[in-house]
Image 1: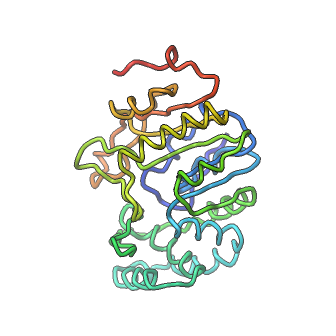
Image 2: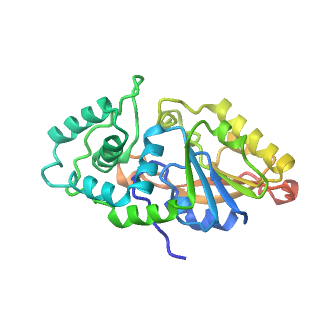
Length: 283
C-alpha cells in the first residue's frame, strides 16, 4: 500500500511508523484519534469513517477549511510560498498577523505558511496563546498541493473535533477502533517536549489515558492502540496491554546526525487479549 505524506510538518509525526501501526490496528467501522496531529495514520488507513480530534484549535480549524474550501484554500495559501515571502521580515510580520487574527479562514492560511516556514515545523505557543516558533531559514519551503488534495479527499469521510482527549474517548461506541498518539514521555530531563500546545501533557495524564484505554477494551469492547517511548514508566503504565517494540526516529534534534533510532512501544488494549503471555520482557 502506498504511503501518503501529511501536508503539515509535525514533531512526532507517525509517517515513519505507518507500516508498524497498520499491522497492529484492529479492523473496525470507524477510527477515532484523540491526538490526530498531522494525520499520518488517518491518511494511510482505510476505515469507513473517522473521528479526528485534537486540543489544538488552529489545527482543527485548518482541517475543516481544507475539507470544505479546498480549491480556494490552495489558491490563497500558494501565494505565500513565494521567494519574496521567505524572509525573516515577512515571516515575523505574518506571525504577528496570525496571532492577532480572528478570521478563521485567514488564520488557516497563515497557519500553513507558519508551519512550512518556521524552525523544524514546530507548533508551539507561549502562555498568552501566541505562536512563537522562530523563522526556519529554509532555502525553498515546499508547497504541499498534492498532499492537501489527498487530505481533502480523505476528509470527506472524517469529522474533525477540537477537544480534550478524555471528552473524545467518552463518546466511543462499539464497532470503533481507537489510536492514541499522545505527546511522548521524554527520554531525558533535557528532552521534555510535551507542551506543543498551551496545555502540558504530564505523567498523570499519561496514566489516565492508559486507564481509559483499558476500560474501553474491557467494558465497551473497543480496541485501543497507544504509541509512546519504550521506558520503564510506559511499560508500567501499559501493563494491561500487549506490547510491541518498534524502532522510531527522533526528529526533534538540532543536529541531523543526532536523530537516532530509539525503541518505541505500541500498546494494544484488546478485549480478547492475553497480555500475561504475549507481552515481551523488558530489555
